[in-house]
Length: 96
Image (cartoon, rainbow, N blue to C red):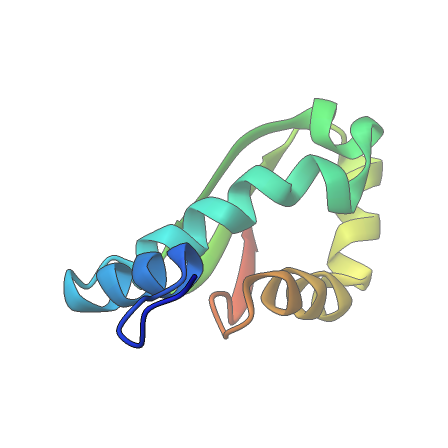
């Protein structure tokens, strides 16, 4: 039996992230953790370094062929990652 002031766990966690201003970092971490699932294991295994700073996704890819392919489809990748996060977490991709 639910009481009138009960809150779901999802709502409570969401409110906590907003109150403590952790939402952006939480979204960034979720985007980084989903990278292998979205891009596939072949690209994920060749990704040597990945991090987000100031809404820019920095990537170090060891294969120049894969790097060139990713440059061509960068807007689609950014869109997929932002859709997963539910907000605009990434605005630009930078290849190191």
